[in-house]
Structures are given as structure tokens and as C-alpha cells.
Length: 289
Image (cartoon, rainbow, N blue to C red; front, side, top):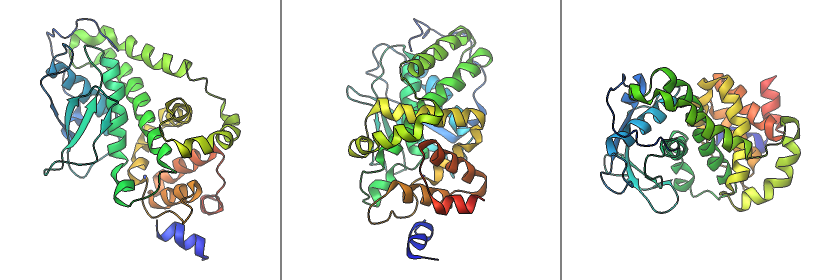
């Protein structure tokens, strides 16, 4: 085993009108026990905290039905006038603080923003900060957040057709899908076969600024399409960011660390992500044979 193999392997992550006046509550999602939320009571532009909580629990359940956390994820959701984010600092009991900028009864926007931050939590976003890693690969963490946003909108659009948080919210399922479809339509996504060339051209900009949302979303849409075919692969993101990067903090080694950290059932998905971007890794290709 050469030095690079040892380094990379053994060092081895919408608005629904005035529907806030609810009448009949549907059954809670079975995965709700994995998520414990606390909603700040004020500052939501007229939206009721209990309704926000139902939307957030619905969004969270769509990801957490495929992810098994070691213990319930505790989240304090607070309003923000800035960009949505999850704080690095956690409460003494392990509770995350998630800040959302959505206001009023724009439930799709609440779901979109929360899905992004929950994906960060599932992918253990704090590892990069704890390990004092460089930001060269942080763009991919932001891309995973975008994947979470797209995924919860798609799945909620289906779930709400028959099992919304409240039975009189069924008619709003199409609005969730419309919100998602517009995001995808406005993204001008290159076809899959063109993505390696696209990534080669855009890689320097992504590494320099991880918050290029339009470009992050282009990559996210292709990964989202893969998860639509096999949503169980959400488990793979729990192994993102493990190990230490090589001295150059290369994206190739970042993916190799992810591949060799992930369980056998998820390795094919990690390789698929590498293939989407045209990232060549002899370590991954040789192992996958």
C-alpha cells in the first residue's frame, strides 16, 4: 500500500394562503420521534408556531425515515433576518439552533430552508470546523444542503396528497411540487454527460466560494435524481467528511475518504457522485471492480 493510499484510506461525510387555521390533524410521521423540535414563539410574520412545527416535522421525516440517528436530533428553530443557517455552537443538551428566514405561511420556503439545514446536521457539518480543515471542499457540504432542500419538497409533495400534517392541507401538495419544479427549471442544468466538463470549468470558483447557490444546485439536482431512484442512500451522507484530507485538501481524496468510510451498501452511491462530476479515482475504481 503506497503513501497516498494509506493517507486516503486509513485517515479515512411556499405560501399556502391562510391555511394556518387548522381543523383536523393527520397521524404524525412514524419518524417524528427521531426529531424533537422547539419553535421560537414570535417573529414569524403571522405564521403560527404550531403550524411551523408541523411543516418542519413533515420535512424532517422525509429525510429521517432513511437515516437512523444514534439518538433523537434536538433542534431549536428561531427566526432570522439573515440567511438561514445552523449554528456551530450547540446547547449543553446537544440541541442545534437552526435559523430560518421564511416568514408568513410560505410553507414550501420553510420546508426548503429546513431541509437544507437538516441535511447539514445529518452530514455532521461540524466535522470540518472541529478538524480545522480548509474550505476547499465546503462547497460540497453546501451542495448536500441543496440536495436536502430538493428532496424534502419532492417527498412532501407526494406525502401530502394522502397524509399531510392536517387533513385540510391535502390540496396544497401540488404547490410543493410547483415550487420544486420552478427551482429545477430555473437552474439550467447540463445533461449528465456534460457534467464532468461543467465541473472542470466550475471547480475553481466552487472551491473559492462555497456559497455559489446556483452552481451548487446544478450538482445537487443530479445527486437528487440519484436519491429519487434510491432514497435509502441518504445514509451515505452520515459518513461524509471522515478522515483527514491530503496536504493539498484535494476533492479526490475527500471523495476517497467518504467512499472508504461509508458502509458497503453506500459505496456505489459515493462512486456515482464521483462519476457525475467526472472525478477520477484509481482507489475507488479499483475497489469497485
